[in-house]
Image (cartoon, rainbow, N blue to C red; front, side, top):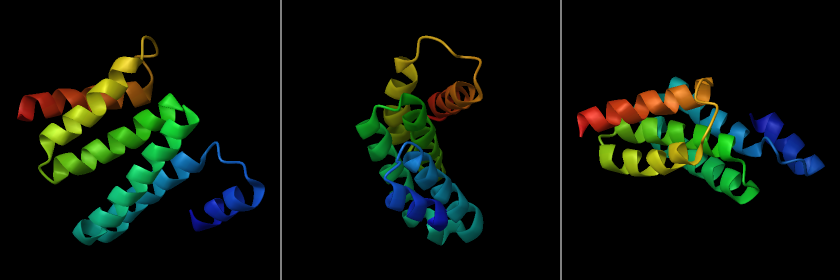
Length: 114
Protein backbone atom coordinates (compact mmCIF):
# COMPACT_ATOMS: atom_id res chain seq x y z
CA UNK A 1 0.00 0.00 0.00
CA UNK A 2 2.86 2.35 0.78
CA UNK A 3 4.29 1.81 -2.69
CA UNK A 4 0.92 2.46 -4.28
CA UNK A 5 0.62 5.74 -2.38
CA UNK A 6 4.09 6.77 -3.57
CA UNK A 7 2.97 6.18 -7.15
CA UNK A 8 -0.15 8.27 -6.55
CA UNK A 9 1.94 11.09 -5.14
CA UNK A 10 4.58 10.96 -7.87
CA UNK A 11 2.15 10.76 -10.80
CA UNK A 12 -0.67 12.87 -9.44
CA UNK A 13 -3.11 10.15 -10.53
CA UNK A 14 -5.43 9.94 -7.58
CA UNK A 15 -8.50 8.10 -8.86
CA UNK A 16 -7.74 4.99 -6.79
CA UNK A 17 -6.23 6.81 -3.83
CA UNK A 18 -9.38 6.42 -1.74
CA UNK A 19 -9.43 2.70 -2.41
CA UNK A 20 -5.76 2.39 -1.49
CA UNK A 21 -6.42 4.03 1.90
CA UNK A 22 -9.47 1.82 2.46
CA UNK A 23 -7.51 -1.33 1.70
CA UNK A 24 -4.69 -0.17 3.95
CA UNK A 25 -7.22 0.13 6.77
CA UNK A 26 -8.55 -3.37 6.08
CA UNK A 27 -5.00 -4.77 6.10
CA UNK A 28 -4.24 -3.00 9.38
CA UNK A 29 -7.27 -4.64 10.97
CA UNK A 30 -6.30 -8.07 9.67
CA UNK A 31 -2.74 -7.74 10.95
CA UNK A 32 -3.10 -5.76 14.14
CA UNK A 33 -6.24 -6.68 16.02
CA UNK A 34 -7.71 -4.22 18.52
CA UNK A 35 -4.70 -1.88 18.61
CA UNK A 36 -5.09 -1.38 14.86
CA UNK A 37 -8.59 0.05 15.20
CA UNK A 38 -7.53 3.70 15.51
CA UNK A 39 -5.13 3.70 12.53
CA UNK A 40 -7.67 1.75 10.45
CA UNK A 41 -10.38 4.25 11.39
CA UNK A 42 -8.07 7.05 10.19
CA UNK A 43 -7.48 5.23 6.89
CA UNK A 44 -11.21 4.72 6.33
CA UNK A 45 -11.95 8.38 7.13
CA UNK A 46 -9.22 9.50 4.75
CA UNK A 47 -10.63 7.23 2.04
CA UNK A 48 -14.10 8.61 2.67
CA UNK A 49 -12.92 12.23 2.45
CA UNK A 50 -11.00 11.56 -0.78
CA UNK A 51 -13.93 9.75 -2.40
CA UNK A 52 -16.29 12.56 -1.45
CA UNK A 53 -13.96 15.18 -2.83
CA UNK A 54 -13.73 13.24 -6.10
CA UNK A 55 -17.46 12.54 -6.25
CA UNK A 56 -16.64 8.82 -6.49
CA UNK A 57 -19.82 7.32 -5.04
CA UNK A 58 -18.75 3.69 -5.35
CA UNK A 59 -15.46 4.36 -3.55
CA UNK A 60 -17.34 6.35 -0.94
CA UNK A 61 -19.72 3.43 -0.39
CA UNK A 62 -16.81 1.02 0.04
CA UNK A 63 -15.05 3.29 2.51
CA UNK A 64 -18.30 3.92 4.36
CA UNK A 65 -19.02 0.21 4.56
CA UNK A 66 -15.56 -0.49 5.96
CA UNK A 67 -15.87 2.30 8.53
CA UNK A 68 -19.40 1.26 9.50
CA UNK A 69 -18.23 -2.34 9.95
CA UNK A 70 -15.43 -1.16 12.26
CA UNK A 71 -17.81 1.02 14.24
CA UNK A 72 -20.21 -1.90 14.57
CA UNK A 73 -17.44 -3.98 16.09
CA UNK A 74 -16.79 -1.11 18.51
CA UNK A 75 -20.46 -1.01 19.53
CA UNK A 76 -21.11 2.27 17.72
CA UNK A 77 -24.20 0.91 15.98
CA UNK A 78 -26.16 4.15 15.63
CA UNK A 79 -23.20 6.02 14.17
CA UNK A 80 -22.55 3.20 11.73
CA UNK A 81 -26.16 3.17 10.59
CA UNK A 82 -26.30 6.97 10.21
CA UNK A 83 -23.11 6.90 8.15
CA UNK A 84 -23.99 4.08 5.79
CA UNK A 85 -27.74 4.49 5.20
CA UNK A 86 -27.56 7.77 3.23
CA UNK A 87 -24.73 6.42 1.08
CA UNK A 88 -26.74 3.35 0.19
CA UNK A 89 -29.81 5.47 -0.55
CA UNK A 90 -27.96 7.42 -3.29
CA UNK A 91 -28.02 4.40 -5.55
CA UNK A 92 -30.98 3.72 -7.81
CA UNK A 93 -29.54 0.75 -9.68
CA UNK A 94 -26.82 -1.85 -9.43
CA UNK A 95 -28.27 -3.55 -6.38
CA UNK A 96 -26.90 -6.88 -7.60
CA UNK A 97 -23.29 -5.64 -7.29
CA UNK A 98 -21.17 -7.00 -4.44
CA UNK A 99 -20.59 -3.53 -2.92
CA UNK A 100 -24.29 -2.71 -2.67
CA UNK A 101 -25.14 -6.21 -1.48
CA UNK A 102 -22.54 -5.96 1.29
CA UNK A 103 -23.78 -2.52 2.32
CA UNK A 104 -27.40 -3.76 2.39
CA UNK A 105 -26.41 -6.78 4.49
CA UNK A 106 -24.58 -4.57 6.98
CA UNK A 107 -27.48 -2.10 7.14
CA UNK A 108 -29.90 -4.95 7.83
CA UNK A 109 -27.65 -6.31 10.58
CA UNK A 110 -27.23 -2.87 12.16
CA UNK A 111 -30.97 -2.23 12.08
CA UNK A 112 -31.63 -5.58 13.76
CA UNK A 113 -29.05 -4.91 16.49
CA UNK A 114 -30.27 -1.43 17.47
